[in-house]
Amino acid sequence: MADPVTRPTDADVLAFINAIEHDGKRADAFVLLDTFRDVTGWEPRMWGPTIIGFGAYH
Image (cartoon, rainbow, N blue to C red; front, side, top):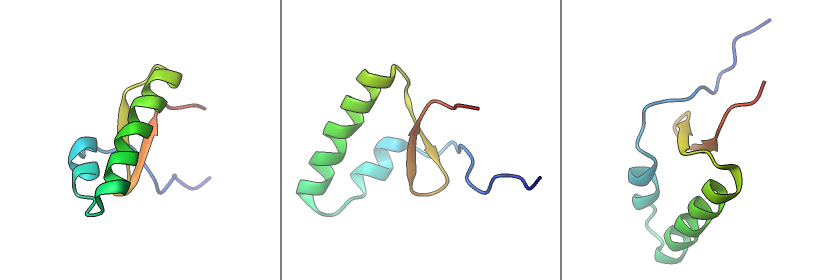
């Protein structure tokens, strides 16, 4: 079986969100970040260069 291409990284989630140029999209991203953190109980982590994930399930 092949290894997954997308893996967790040590990239900074907040830096990724702060790099969003559009003010409204950046604000929405922070709302979603808080919502997903509250719902899942997990801290956010970058998976690859552009995906924010919460937890890992196998």
